[in-house]
Amino acid sequence: MKNGSNGRKWRTEGEALLREQGWLAEISQPLQDKLVAQGRWLERAPGEPLAMAGEESGGLTGIAIGTVFSRAANAPAEVSMTDLHFAPVWMASRSFVPGEARMLSVVAQTEVKALRIPQFALFQLMGQHPELTAHLFRNFANLFARMTIVIGNAHLRDGRARCIAVLLRLVDTQYQGPVPDWIPIGQMDLAGMANVSRQKVGDVLRELEALGLVELGYRQMRVRDRDRLMAMVPD
View 1: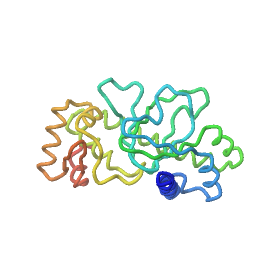
View 2 (view 1 turned 90 degrees about the vertical axis):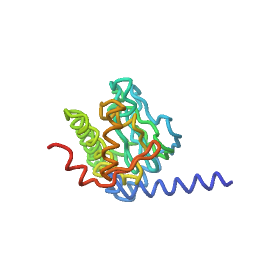
View 3 (view 1 turned 135 degrees about the vertical axis):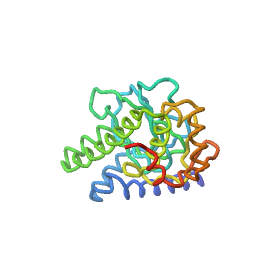
Protein backbone atom coordinates (compact mmCIF):
# COMPACT_ATOMS: atom_id res chain seq x y z
CA MET A 1 0.00 0.00 0.00
CA LYS A 2 2.83 2.37 0.90
CA ASN A 3 4.61 1.86 -2.44
CA GLY A 4 1.37 2.42 -4.32
CA SER A 5 0.75 5.64 -2.43
CA ASN A 6 4.29 6.88 -3.12
CA GLY A 7 3.90 5.99 -6.80
CA ARG A 8 0.71 7.98 -7.09
CA LYS A 9 2.40 10.92 -5.35
CA TRP A 10 5.36 11.20 -7.73
CA ARG A 11 3.11 10.71 -10.75
CA THR A 12 0.92 13.57 -9.55
CA GLU A 13 3.96 15.77 -8.92
CA GLY A 14 5.57 14.83 -12.22
CA GLU A 15 2.40 15.48 -14.20
CA ALA A 16 2.03 18.91 -12.58
CA LEU A 17 5.61 19.83 -13.51
CA LEU A 18 5.16 18.80 -17.16
CA ARG A 19 1.91 20.77 -17.39
CA GLU A 20 3.47 23.91 -15.91
CA GLN A 21 6.57 24.28 -18.08
CA GLY A 22 7.58 23.64 -21.67
CA TRP A 23 5.49 23.11 -24.79
CA LEU A 24 2.74 21.22 -22.93
CA ALA A 25 2.09 24.30 -20.77
CA GLU A 26 1.09 26.24 -23.90
CA ILE A 27 -1.74 23.83 -24.75
CA SER A 28 -5.31 24.05 -23.51
CA GLN A 29 -6.08 21.92 -20.46
CA PRO A 30 -8.55 19.61 -22.29
CA LEU A 31 -5.86 18.74 -24.84
CA GLN A 32 -3.28 18.37 -22.07
CA ASP A 33 -5.63 15.87 -20.44
CA LYS A 34 -5.89 13.83 -23.63
CA LEU A 35 -2.12 13.76 -24.13
CA VAL A 36 -1.36 12.77 -20.54
CA ALA A 37 -4.05 10.07 -20.63
CA GLN A 38 -2.25 8.44 -23.59
CA GLY A 39 1.09 8.40 -21.78
CA ARG A 40 2.84 5.67 -19.83
CA TRP A 41 4.94 6.49 -16.77
CA LEU A 42 8.51 5.21 -16.60
CA GLU A 43 11.04 4.98 -13.78
CA ARG A 44 14.77 4.68 -14.47
CA ALA A 45 17.74 4.32 -12.15
CA PRO A 46 21.06 6.06 -12.96
CA GLY A 47 22.64 4.47 -16.02
CA GLU A 48 19.43 2.90 -17.31
CA PRO A 49 18.32 3.90 -20.84
CA LEU A 50 15.04 5.52 -21.76
CA ALA A 51 15.77 5.24 -25.48
CA MET A 52 18.68 3.94 -27.54
CA ALA A 53 20.12 5.14 -30.83
CA GLY A 54 19.04 2.96 -33.73
CA GLU A 55 15.55 2.27 -32.38
CA GLU A 56 12.63 3.13 -34.64
CA SER A 57 10.10 3.65 -31.85
CA GLY A 58 8.86 7.22 -31.99
CA GLY A 59 6.86 9.44 -29.71
CA LEU A 60 7.75 11.95 -27.03
CA THR A 61 9.24 11.42 -23.60
CA GLY A 62 8.62 14.05 -20.95
CA ILE A 63 11.31 13.98 -18.27
CA ALA A 64 9.28 15.06 -15.24
CA ILE A 65 11.75 14.45 -12.41
CA GLY A 66 15.52 14.02 -12.57
CA THR A 67 18.33 14.46 -15.09
CA VAL A 68 19.09 12.53 -18.27
CA PHE A 69 21.98 12.66 -20.70
CA SER A 70 21.93 12.25 -24.45
CA ARG A 71 24.66 10.65 -26.52
CA ALA A 72 24.98 10.90 -30.29
CA ALA A 73 25.14 7.60 -32.13
CA ASN A 74 28.32 8.66 -33.96
CA ALA A 75 30.13 9.96 -30.85
CA PRO A 76 33.61 8.52 -30.21
CA ALA A 77 33.74 5.65 -27.72
CA GLU A 78 35.45 7.80 -25.08
CA VAL A 79 32.58 10.33 -25.13
CA SER A 80 30.05 9.07 -22.59
CA MET A 81 27.55 11.88 -23.17
CA THR A 82 26.80 14.71 -25.57
CA ASP A 83 24.57 16.85 -23.36
CA LEU A 84 22.65 16.91 -20.07
CA HIS A 85 18.92 17.66 -19.82
CA PHE A 86 17.14 18.74 -16.66
CA ALA A 87 13.48 18.16 -15.89
CA PRO A 88 10.93 19.22 -16.84
CA VAL A 89 11.97 18.77 -20.46
CA TRP A 90 10.59 16.84 -23.45
CA MET A 91 12.83 14.61 -25.56
CA ALA A 92 11.99 13.77 -29.15
CA SER A 93 14.02 12.24 -31.95
CA ARG A 94 14.26 11.57 -35.67
CA SER A 95 12.27 8.38 -35.03
CA PHE A 96 9.19 10.58 -34.61
CA VAL A 97 9.05 10.27 -38.42
CA PRO A 98 7.84 6.77 -39.39
CA GLY A 99 10.63 4.59 -40.79
CA GLU A 100 13.44 6.68 -39.30
CA ALA A 101 15.72 5.61 -36.45
CA ARG A 102 16.89 7.48 -33.38
CA MET A 103 20.17 9.37 -33.66
CA LEU A 104 20.53 9.91 -29.91
CA SER A 105 20.46 7.63 -26.90
CA VAL A 106 18.78 9.03 -23.79
CA VAL A 107 19.96 7.62 -20.45
CA ALA A 108 19.16 8.44 -16.83
CA GLN A 109 21.96 10.38 -15.09
CA THR A 110 20.04 10.47 -11.82
CA GLU A 111 16.85 8.72 -10.76
CA VAL A 112 14.28 9.68 -13.38
CA LYS A 113 10.50 9.72 -13.64
CA ALA A 114 9.19 10.24 -17.15
CA LEU A 115 6.00 10.17 -19.20
CA ARG A 116 6.17 8.58 -22.65
CA ILE A 117 3.47 9.43 -25.19
CA PRO A 118 3.57 6.94 -28.11
CA GLN A 119 3.81 8.01 -31.72
CA PHE A 120 0.45 6.56 -32.78
CA ALA A 121 -1.37 8.51 -30.05
CA LEU A 122 0.34 11.75 -31.03
CA PHE A 123 -0.55 11.31 -34.70
CA GLN A 124 -4.15 10.52 -33.79
CA LEU A 125 -4.44 13.62 -31.63
CA MET A 126 -2.73 15.77 -34.28
CA GLY A 127 -5.45 14.69 -36.70
CA GLN A 128 -8.17 15.64 -34.23
CA HIS A 129 -6.48 18.84 -33.04
CA PRO A 130 -4.49 20.53 -35.85
CA GLU A 131 -3.14 23.17 -33.42
CA LEU A 132 -1.14 20.43 -31.70
CA THR A 133 1.18 20.20 -34.72
CA ALA A 134 2.45 23.74 -34.23
CA HIS A 135 3.11 23.10 -30.54
CA LEU A 136 5.04 19.92 -31.31
CA PHE A 137 7.18 21.61 -33.92
CA ARG A 138 7.98 24.36 -31.44
CA ASN A 139 9.37 21.67 -29.14
CA PHE A 140 11.39 20.18 -32.02
CA ALA A 141 12.73 23.66 -32.84
CA ASN A 142 13.91 24.07 -29.24
CA LEU A 143 15.70 20.72 -29.37
CA PHE A 144 17.36 21.71 -32.63
CA ALA A 145 18.42 25.06 -31.15
CA ARG A 146 19.98 23.25 -28.22
CA MET A 147 21.94 21.02 -30.60
CA THR A 148 23.26 24.04 -32.52
CA ILE A 149 24.72 25.30 -29.24
CA VAL A 150 26.38 21.90 -28.74
CA ILE A 151 27.88 22.12 -32.24
CA GLY A 152 29.00 25.70 -31.67
CA ASN A 153 30.77 24.73 -28.45
CA ALA A 154 32.60 21.94 -30.26
CA HIS A 155 34.02 24.38 -32.82
CA LEU A 156 35.81 26.57 -30.29
CA ARG A 157 39.49 26.02 -30.98
CA ASP A 158 40.80 26.48 -27.46
CA GLY A 159 40.25 23.58 -25.04
CA ARG A 160 39.92 25.89 -22.04
CA ALA A 161 37.23 27.89 -23.84
CA ARG A 162 35.38 24.66 -24.77
CA CYS A 163 35.32 23.55 -21.12
CA ILE A 164 33.90 26.89 -20.02
CA ALA A 165 31.38 26.95 -22.88
CA VAL A 166 30.09 23.48 -21.92
CA LEU A 167 29.67 24.58 -18.29
CA LEU A 168 27.71 27.62 -19.46
CA ARG A 169 25.52 25.44 -21.68
CA LEU A 170 24.74 23.14 -18.79
CA VAL A 171 23.44 26.01 -16.65
CA ASP A 172 21.47 27.61 -19.50
CA THR A 173 17.73 27.25 -18.84
CA GLN A 174 16.53 28.52 -22.21
CA TYR A 175 15.66 25.09 -23.63
CA GLN A 176 15.22 22.96 -20.51
CA GLY A 177 13.88 22.99 -16.99
CA PRO A 178 15.43 24.70 -13.95
CA VAL A 179 19.09 23.78 -13.50
CA PRO A 180 19.81 22.06 -10.18
CA ASP A 181 22.16 23.87 -7.82
CA TRP A 182 24.68 21.03 -8.20
CA ILE A 183 25.10 19.65 -11.73
CA PRO A 184 25.39 15.83 -11.60
CA ILE A 185 28.43 15.43 -13.83
CA GLY A 186 31.98 14.22 -13.25
CA GLN A 187 35.24 15.49 -14.69
CA MET A 188 35.55 12.60 -17.15
CA ASP A 189 32.09 13.34 -18.53
CA LEU A 190 32.92 17.03 -18.88
CA ALA A 191 36.20 16.17 -20.60
CA GLY A 192 34.35 14.08 -23.17
CA MET A 193 31.74 16.76 -23.79
CA ALA A 194 34.45 19.41 -24.26
CA ASN A 195 36.73 17.10 -26.28
CA VAL A 196 39.72 17.65 -23.99
CA SER A 197 41.81 15.36 -21.79
CA ARG A 198 40.91 14.59 -18.18
CA GLN A 199 44.07 16.43 -17.13
CA LYS A 200 43.07 19.52 -19.12
CA VAL A 201 39.57 19.67 -17.69
CA GLY A 202 41.02 19.19 -14.19
CA ASP A 203 43.40 22.12 -14.72
CA VAL A 204 40.57 24.34 -15.98
CA LEU A 205 38.24 23.43 -13.11
CA ARG A 206 40.92 24.05 -10.49
CA GLU A 207 41.58 27.45 -12.06
CA LEU A 208 37.89 28.32 -12.02
CA GLU A 209 37.52 27.05 -8.47
CA ALA A 210 40.45 29.22 -7.32
CA LEU A 211 38.72 32.22 -8.90
CA GLY A 212 35.50 31.40 -7.05
CA LEU A 213 33.59 30.75 -10.28
CA VAL A 214 32.80 27.08 -9.69
CA GLU A 215 32.59 24.72 -6.73
CA LEU A 216 33.57 21.07 -7.11
CA GLY A 217 32.17 18.00 -5.38
CA TYR A 218 32.19 14.24 -5.93
CA ARG A 219 30.86 13.70 -9.47
CA GLN A 220 29.09 17.03 -9.30
CA MET A 221 29.89 20.70 -9.68
CA ARG A 222 28.24 24.06 -9.20
CA VAL A 223 28.60 27.25 -11.24
CA ARG A 224 28.83 30.18 -8.82
CA ASP A 225 29.28 33.14 -11.20
CA ARG A 226 27.80 32.65 -14.66
CA ASP A 227 28.40 36.25 -15.79
CA ARG A 228 32.13 36.11 -15.09
CA LEU A 229 32.36 32.75 -16.82
CA MET A 230 30.66 34.17 -19.90
CA ALA A 231 33.27 36.92 -20.07
CA MET A 232 35.99 34.25 -20.36
CA VAL A 233 34.63 32.72 -23.57
CA PRO A 234 35.77 34.42 -26.83
CA ASP A 235 33.06 35.80 -29.12
